[in-house]
Length: 76
Image 1 (cartoon, rainbow, N blue to C red):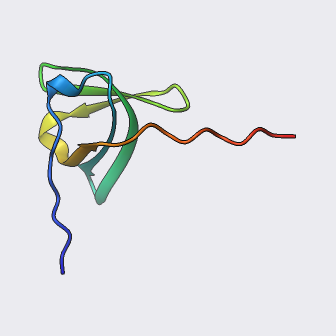
Image 2 (cartoon, rainbow, N blue to C red):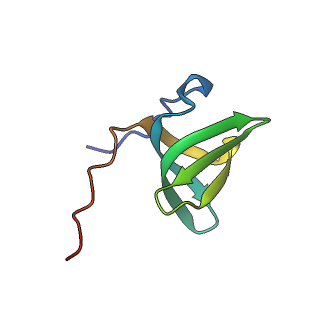
């Protein structure tokens, strides 16, 4: 059974935590974070480490809303 890639987000999901898979030369790249904006064909996703990923809409292969990240364990 082959996996089915589906884009299941819209601009209405701004502020939600999403996961994306996009086409890049040689394969795919994934990004998980908060969808900060989606304008002029560009999605901006803020990752947990604070970096902002800009994704061209036409490169999206799959995307969906995901639950909030679990809390990180405290370091001792």
